[in-house]
Length: 364
Image 1 (spheres, rainbow, N blue to C red):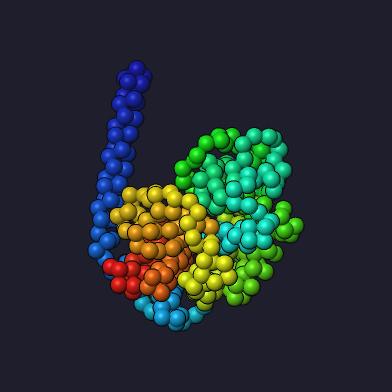
Image 2 (cartoon, rainbow, N blue to C red):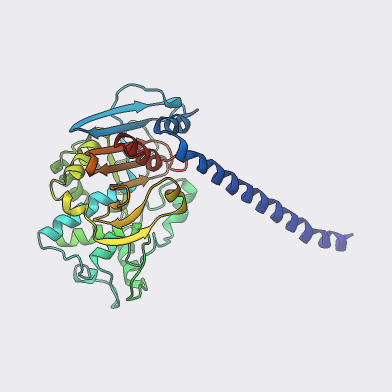
């Protein structure tokens, strides 16, 4: 009897594996079919679908057009709710702000775009070091992040993966990273932007959080700041005060401030004409992005540039938030979408934002 059981076990495992593969394949096919429906939907259709049944969902949509700013707040089932200013995590849109600080440092002669980073920060070992330009454009060869032991505890506790990873560990990784001296393709890197934050601290001799908060006020964004975990919508990511990855995704903001930011980008003021110009051609986009008419043809100081549609954009996503800011200069329009839903929840802000921007600009 034991022999028969041993013979049956591999067969049972094989059957389970085949069933699992069939289920996953079916889900992938179903997901692809669902995605194919999205291009035909309007922005309002996408919004209503995304907020359908989401009793705690709050999506704020801001538009800058003809020099005027306006915004609307939507709740469950896409219904308009109180015109309140909510505090959102903007996730990786923080990278464009960090990149603007780098642009300021370049303009002041403190950094050079094509200088290797070991000119500004002492690395634990000698070897090839990528340039500032490569970090800004995600072409350094660095991965999205390096695994650290803190990530295990963060996962088990349901925290932000990067919580508690200090600058000492960032510096150690910089010393051990084996990046070849060769052209690297586009590879989105939170680690690269954490490194830019460290470099900014070195050249200015001050704490990154203080530097960012001062700059946000100078840009006319008084309600925006490096995260303190406080706000009205809850479920904010946990961070430690001096975490290394804060420059990659640690800013909180509201719609008024983000529309002010959109105006800086749209008008190219305070250096944003330089920061949003292409400094690296990349010509990459995922199949799903191309299906949604979203392109990544080039990169500026952190900004993605869709040359075909004439859009400068970036997005951001955390565990419970996702955001989008897009500008179409030839039409004089900009769109900001701030959501307290995960990027994986139905239709993300990136898709809705790009769709709305083209609709109001007469491009779709």
